[in-house]
Image 1 (cartoon, rainbow, N blue to C red):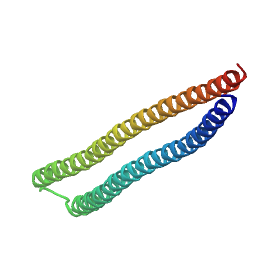
Image 2 (tube, rainbow, N blue to C red):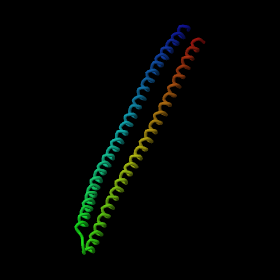
Image 3 (tube, one colour):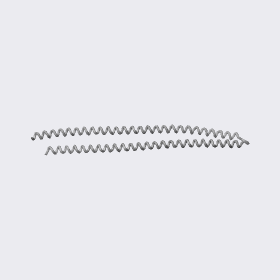
Length: 188
């Protein structure tokens, strides 16, 4: 009878040893899976950041092109205004004498043209500022969305890791309790 108990105890101890080894392997695999999942999440996050960065770069390039276009239009209008002023000066020098009423009409037309050109310049500047503001708002919205996404992913990953560590500690406690029971039971 004593030999039978000893044999069964040895068998139980072998099984417990194998079980402990399997638990160790399982924990190792779980760690690998958790690491792989964390890497996948990191890669996905990195990919979304790169996509957002690409979109921001495209927006900035578009804004820069629009600003160049507006600067070119502004330059053309400025040159036209300077040309008009030059013509006005030369006209006023050439005109002397009794034809003052014609000069008044010509000056009035030039003033209106100059005013129109100035208004066009102001519209261009306003349009440029509106575009820049719209792009800045869009970039701010994208950045806020990206930050929120990052915060959510970090929080999810942190919670997931905490749960994993908690489950692992519970398993270790179970393993320790089983070892204590194994030590106590054979001695009884």
